[in-house]
Length: 137
Image (cartoon, rainbow, N blue to C red; front, side, top):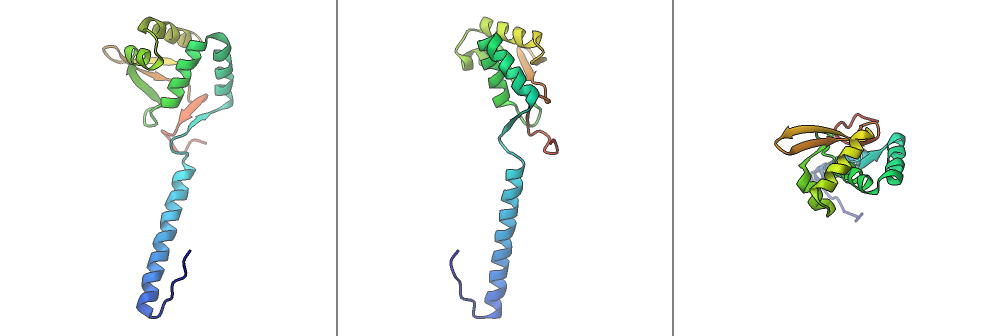
């Protein structure tokens, strides 16, 4: 931090306001960091699920990982259609359909129809969670 010489009361008041604003900015930055913004949290049950999927079906494991990474923090799900997923995973739509069925059969995912071919894909928030509720431990 650079040294500033303060000569008058007016300069002291200005400097005090500057320091107060810096303190407030630092406090806001600490609060944002505390919220784990941008992080996906994986709990012990989630790690267990990841290990099981990796052993059982590599493609479904990749799809589950994609969902975990891209959960919308406002709703706790990924909303898209199967063709979008196929394009993202570089496979055909039938493969995505098989992987989704595998994840549903193993209770790793809940598929919620939204409109037409668009669905919301939600993971168990006790396994994988992204900050849609900052009060969650």
